[in-house]
Amino acid sequence: MAEFMTGLKRTDYCGELRQSDTGRVVTVFGWAQRQRDLGQLIFIDLRDRTGIVQLAFDDNTDRAVFEKAAAVRSEFVLAAVGKVRERSAKTNKIPTGDIEIEVTELRILSESETPPFEIIDNCNTAEATRLKYRYLDLRRPQLQQNIIFRHKVAKVTRDYFDENGFIELETPMLIKSTPEGARDFLVPSRIHKGSFYALPQSPQMYKQLCMVAGFDRYMQIARCFRDEDLRADRQPEFTQIDLEMSFVDMEDVLSIGEGYIKRLFKEVMNIDIPTPFPRYTYNEVMERFGSDKPDTRYGMEIIDLTDAVADSEFAVFKNAIEGGGSVRAINAKSSVKVYTRKAIDKMTEFVRGIGAKGLAWIRYTEDGVSSSFGKFMSEEQMNALLTKAGAEVGDVIMIVADTDNNTVLSTLGAVRTECAKKLEIIGDGFNFLWVVKFPFFEFDKESGEWVAMHHPFTSPTDECIDKLDGNKGEVYAKAYDMVLNGIELSSGSIRITNPDLQNKMFEMLGMSDEEANAKFGFLMDAFKYGAPPHGGMGIGLDRLVMQMLKAPTLRDVVLFPKVQNASELMTNAPSDVDPLQLEELGIAIKPAEKQGDEK
Image 1: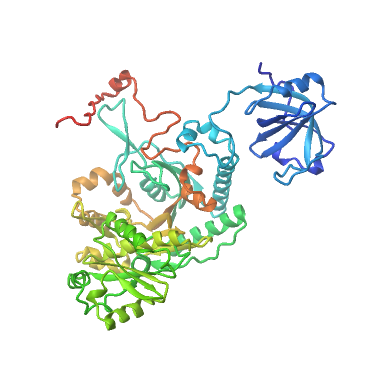
Image 2: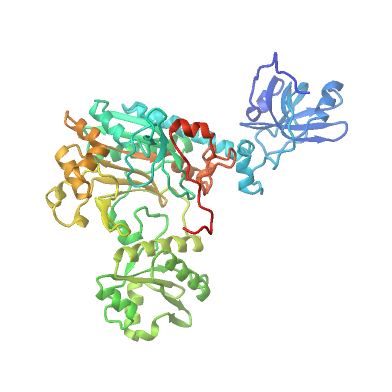
């Protein structure tokens, strides 16, 4: 029978008691991690969010209390009163290993059925089961510490931006749908049947309106929503540290961002992050790393072999060069024992799976050079290639050729990452960098149209203003991304505030005046009434915490995460709703076609 805690008040958390507390009478609450009944001696490990303390029951314990302790099972909720004493058998496995509590009063506040898995770190239970019982999974010490760590990050965030003159403002969660990039989550309106709100992908337009309103430094820890496919570092709902500043240029925004990171890592982890961060242009990181979010904890940069193989008769190289493309490679140093022919075949399958036509290779062993294309190369040509690639005995050269340089670079960027993981050469530090000077437009092969690489409110660089009627591929933006260890942490830009320039960019994106007005008319109207120069960025809080903790997925730093199909296993969301609710909204559900049905 569960008891009440009337008259008891916690004096200490379990994991905070130390040898200096010896002799004190304390009251603790928590869950029974385990109970050990040795006959005339019972020990209970009591756990709360700070850790574990041992409760002791022996010959000196009141019989009623002793018998109650004998009835305790794992995950019972207990209240215990007693005197802190030194343990006879001390342990350094837990911080409280020098002491225990000699219990004089024990109350069972709540009993527990046998949980579906043991509440311990390094639990071998399938993740699907743990997510179904997420409230139990969250009792595990490591997950609890992750969530508490996240709380500390949020606190330092608010402190830093407050001290730097930012005002925390809340923007709406039910907004106008203006889909840009990812799909919106839509919310039907009961009052305005047939009309929909959207959940914000970011507070972008509202924070710009805050600048027009005169709140010159805005900050918000904002919830954002994007209806897109999930992966290890993506959830359909996520948290963003959002900021915007008036009367600034790009240097001001980057400086604030670097100051925040430096303060955060020092205060939360006692790690000194060097500033300023290295800065690369978009074109530079693509040429060197094949990615606009490069991991610089290891080398293996991309090598341009185009000139070295210009006279080759190998059709793959020849066709790529003649078609305006290139031949490039990475040198996986000292990897010849790892990258056997079988392993290279798997890498070839990998690159084909991401859009490349294939992978050429060279293995440089003590017995000489073997390659997939050697018979098409003279000895002189092969030596020139090896020299250009910096090849030595033990190296493996992986080569991609294509008429599309973007395909070559992005493929080798992916190969570089895969190789680094397989060779286990990724360092253990925190390598921050900025990527700047992004193209304003990128060509979407599926639609055959030019789209905004960031968003249409990003300002083109000053030198590109006079080139807007020329080649769209040569227009660059005042945009910048913060990158940490191969993960994009933030994206931002200096915004357009000139209505004429904004209309021009809409026009270049293929928007009619009617479409632009329907989507963004309220923002354009605001800019007519004195919009200050402004810019900002959004830093992904979930991703930042994940990287700081070196957690494998976002699910390790989010309280109630979704799985790959965007469902939540604990509550079975999304779910059907009552037909009456749909009727009130004026919505009819069309039955899904079963697999195999003829269309």
